[in-house]
Every structure is written in C-alpha cells, then in structure tokens.
Image (cartoon, rainbow, N blue to C red):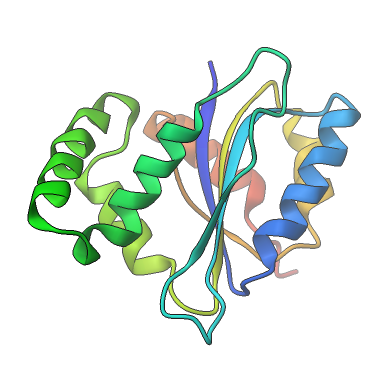
Length: 164
C-alpha cells in the first residue's frame, strides 16, 4: 500500500533538500517514491509556488491533475470565482476516501505559510531505519499521512528527533 505523507519545513528550501535526499535513497532501494509535489513559499511572495515532480517510478503515480487540484483546493480557492470554487469544493469532498478531508485541508492551509515549504509524497517499501538515518540532518515536521492512527504513531516515533 502506498502512503501519502506531508512533511513541513521551517524554510522555503527545506522540501527541495529532502526530496533530493529521498531520490538518492530511492536509487539505493531504501524507499520507493511513486510521486511527489512541493510547495515553496518564500517570505516575499503573496502565494506559494507549487511544483509537481512527475512520476519517479516506471509504474507511474498520481497524475498532475491530482496535484493541481489538491493545491488548488489548499491554496487558491479563496482567490477563485464562485463557480470554480464550488466545483473545486465538490471535488475536494470526493477526496475523503483517500484521507484528504476538511481537517487535512485546514491543517495544511494553517501550517504552510510564508517562509515555509512542504513536501507531499506518495511512497512505499521504505526501510524506515535507513530512511530515518538519511533524513536525521533535516529539520521537518510530519504533518499527516493516510495511515491508520497506530501506523501513523509508529512513523512519528521513527522521525521524532532525540534531544539527548
């Protein structure tokens, strides 16, 4: 089963650095990144910059339409006309089946702000201890996943930074 994960970074460049690290880990067969998208929000910009990173595996992944609509729902709905906003609202309602609901949307909107970045990942087959070690140098927060509550807590425990 593929996992949709959202990581938030305290800088607008953080998502790119971790994506580069994950691409390297994929070459080492430590994780499979099926697809990814980034949101970078420089402090001097009114809106975030979004970037879909096309399928990173031969089997494909989610389409650009998915990422485009998701980012539209997350960041641009208030700027759109009523008809487009209503259509996107209806589309967003259908995302609950994959764990994207109003709570997810509200959380991402409130967390991804000017000066931050986020990385949206569709992954599987992670060797968690190796991925954790490879990402330990980066400052990020795990915002959400589509895992069960128990599975998500295990993932959070893996990525929890030791202050010792």
